[in-house]
Length: 277
Image (tube, rainbow, N blue to C red; front, side, top):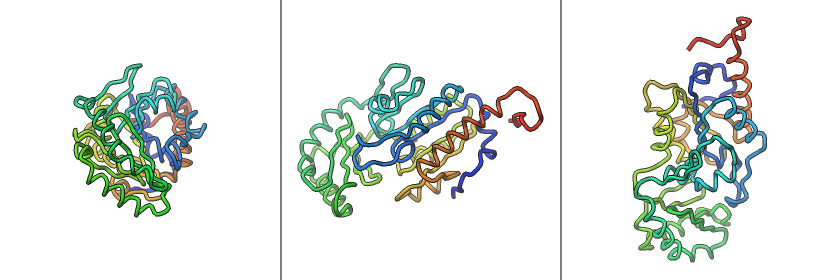
């Protein structure tokens, strides 16, 4: 079970790994969850620290349920990799790539959107088209549990929706292509490039990422659960550490910047010398 992270000293060997990779979810991790997806904002301190880490040579990749292009435009951090739709697409070095078999589901998701359009008439229910993925949010519903039941019921009755797998997150139901692709698979592919990996996440889909990383051999790995309303038990069971919400993430990133500057200094006084790895 995860323990609160209040010092980076225990992470020193990991943070001195080279190359070092940082994998992070976005919503609920780098930005507070907003009532509507388009209203989410990443605090300036979080953005600044991420840019500083990139400039320090840390490989930064965002693994999100948002579309890769949307995440790229939103964060606008040169040098980062953007993995969108839970691993179905990747923006890297100026190029957008889709996983094999994804493209046919763009039209199928549009058909499902047409069949599920009446859900948009329910109070507080929002439909979000994400290319090959369709998300139905019910966070704003007066009775979220009742709204969830209605959404799942409509999905079961939709012929077009049967082409997808149904996944649930925090106040959202998603239809995703049944291709065996999730954040875990994406994380493993990225982590092959690095010696050390620090992963951040807050939701059920991030548990897939933590689970995949914990199975890696020959690498230093630490998984940090970002605590918030409704933090999944599965995430806490797979995490090594916790931080309190987005403010805790901002603290962690800032401490990483400071620690790397200190520990990577040329050998001087013994207290400043990096630990042996």
